[in-house]
Amino acid sequence: MNVIAVEGGRTLQGELTVQSAKNSVLPILAATILCGDTCVIENCPRLEDVDASGAILRHLGCRVQWQGEDLIVDSAPLCRGEIPDEMMRRMRSSVIFLGAILARCGRAELSYPGGCELGPRPIDLHLSALRMLGAQVEESGGRLCCSGGKLRGAEIVLGLPSVGATENAILAACGVGGTTVITNAAREPEIVDLQNFLCKMGAEVRGAGTSTVTVEGGRPLHGCRHRCIGDRIAAATYLCAAAATGGDICLRGVDYRHLSTVTTALCQAGCRVSSGEQWIHLTSGGALRGICPVRTSPYPGFPTDAQAVLMAALLRSSGTTVFVENMFQNRYRHVAELARLGADIRLEGPVAVLYGVKRLRGAPVRCTDLRGGAALVLAGLQADGVTEVGEIHHIKRGYGDLPGDLRRLGAAVREIKK
Image 1 (cartoon, rainbow, N blue to C red):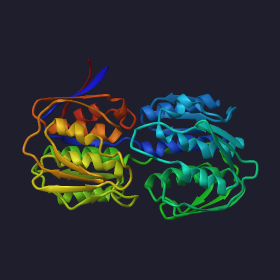
Image 2 (image 1 turned 180 degrees about the vertical axis):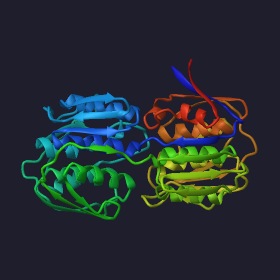
Image 3 (image 1 turned 135 degrees about the horizontal axis):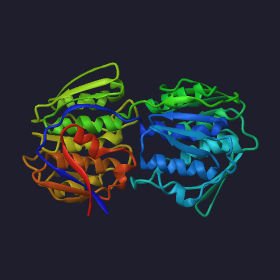
Image 4 (image 1 turned 120 degrees about the horizontal axis):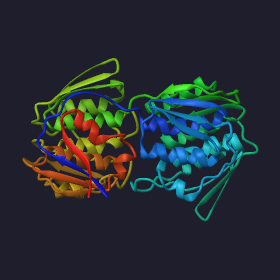
């Protein structure tokens, strides 16, 4: 069993290029199914979730191989439309394959997805969107069987701006004839990236980044090359790490506009932030202060994925900060582990009240989920002594090399075998 060992007390300094966005890469890998040709995903991050997606593509019959830092997917030989239960359970995002398989094969069979236990993430919106396109969906014994013999473009109105449901609807709509209009669509930058990739393949998709997305389906598609946008959540993690340790860092390869709510919060806490085309520079004096209430919400609101790392950055701040988690009911599972290091956080339903403390002490802790695991590493950077973070497979789902990136910024962080 490996753990991440963190020695606290180091100030982060230097420059780092941010990895490509996990939440762009995964739906784009699913989208490669549509073209029946070869696609190259440039500078693809080597994540556990990318490996899981690659395993699904191979099971479906695609050829998948790494060429340096690029991932090459040839979906021409795709020969089946079902995904085994054990593959679905490896990650939550596996359900994103549903729309693409249905469009390509006319039928898809899979089980409910796995991944981090953040509470119920019902896929009802996904299934409802596909039904609006004409799909027939049967649920039995935890398996979903979708058939699409009469798929046509349609008006799809989402009850909530779900990222996954928006992506699944776009992917399915690309493969069927007619015009599809998705209303109340999610607006995340990763959906814009998916649209750009699909358009490179020959699809006609417009409106991503707004609440209305239009797809002119049935266009002939072909392979392409694509480089995904920078990972705004990984960037938020490094900015919060520098803020907490009194650091001075510059991140490259990320759009500062995608992080405006996070950088605004860090400025409120006392940091100085400047930005330009594909770079963000943060300077922190280390003595952070409590900030206005942080309420998570769909983009362009404060991202739920950045809640845990911002909380970790403020553990030693002066004053009090209130967090209100509006997206997932189990998104505070890291709080009990932070308390082992000396954090003072009180929970009441979706509300967490953080009282800043003067010192944190290193201790053994365990990851509860992907972003909660990153928060524990950030807490360890501030703690006296050594913090050992266990169950780090969660972290590897979304960070290519979190210990290595932090070391490049001057931290004493390493993965060790216990």
